[in-house]
Image 1 (cartoon, rainbow, N blue to C red):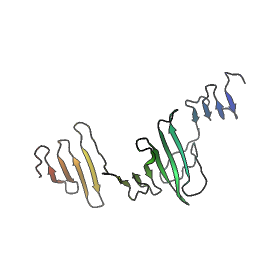
Image 2 (image 1 turned 180 degrees about the vertical axis):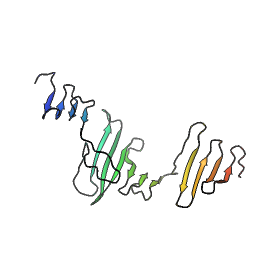
Image 3 (image 1 turned 135 degrees about the horizontal axis):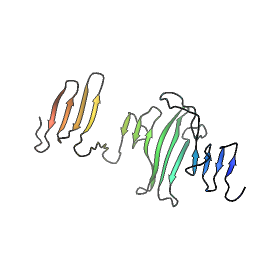
Image 4 (image 1 turned 180 degrees about the horizontal axis):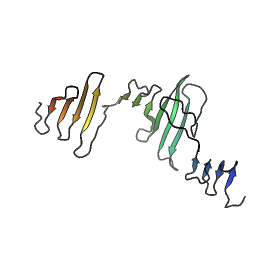
Length: 193
């Protein structure tokens, strides 16, 4: 092994450590510091077990145990984490966490629980999207560009409504089921129609 040679463990590709310090697993010319490659196909199927992940992070089987990835820079000016926390003997939530420098504390930004509910500002989302702010107003923003409209669609098996800010700057409720617009606020006058 010479100073400018790569270190190869295993036959052919195997694990290759390039003289640049980049590591390739089943990759002879790694692009990043760690490059994992697989030639076998494993098509993603929603609702099915996908049995060939490229990387597995595993922890002991106990509630509140965490397996994750930490993102930071060389001086630690920021920290963000993406991981999975075990919440029961057969359940785990995906969590996005970071260090809030202004509040000098770690906090959870977002959680996707084992049932698929998404929580922002809450560690126990009860709805498909659950936004909570215990110290002020909880807000969600729908923002469109120039000459665009922003809409919130409310629909069940029988009715279909849009609450929207239209391209002509009118605020309206549109009934898709009946094909009518029963409520409108005009942008400059504030008149209701």
